[in-house]
Image 1 (cartoon, rainbow, N blue to C red):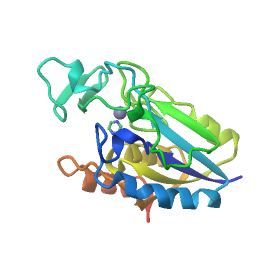
Image 2 (image 1 turned 90 degrees about the horizontal axis):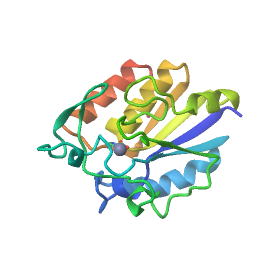
Image 3 (image 1 turned 60 degrees about the vertical axis):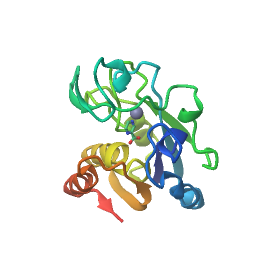
Image 4 (image 1 turned 45 degrees about the horizontal axis):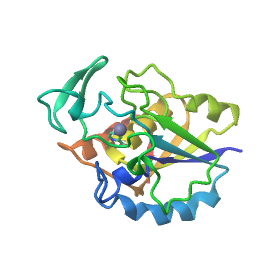
Length: 197
Ligand code: VGL
Ligand code: ZN
């Protein structure tokens, strides 16, 4: 068992019609489903926020979505309310195969956001994914999903830093693209040693 597919946040709120829709986010569902059988393990992640999460602009008086705010661990962009636990927006896209080996939820602590599938945005709180991969001997990772410039980007960079052999299939990702975040993410992933294909 060596090669895992990690499917990042293919959830209704990140698809067209959702609260934080990524343009063409739904286009990647069918090709992702089709490649799942080529891997030794399939892991899905799910952005999973409590109502009133500190990453939501609605939790900060006078702030709007996409404004910056000071979080306990530093500055970050604020989002529309999205992926609230148990809501339809937080569910996987209805056509996504969700019969993978593991579903890892992240962003469930009220005051810490989590872009990466490995560490929350304080960069110290682990999600447990590293231990799961290591104990199953999964050293080679292919990442796909939403959004290229946030959760895929941070997951891929953390994976490379942790010593995994990591590739991102760019054709099976889509970006939000705020202020050049898409180009910046590609540079950061390449600089971290991630293979972009
Ligand atoms: C994401 C912003 C906020 C993502 C999650 O999945 O890329 N982006 N929460
Ligand atoms: Zn989120």
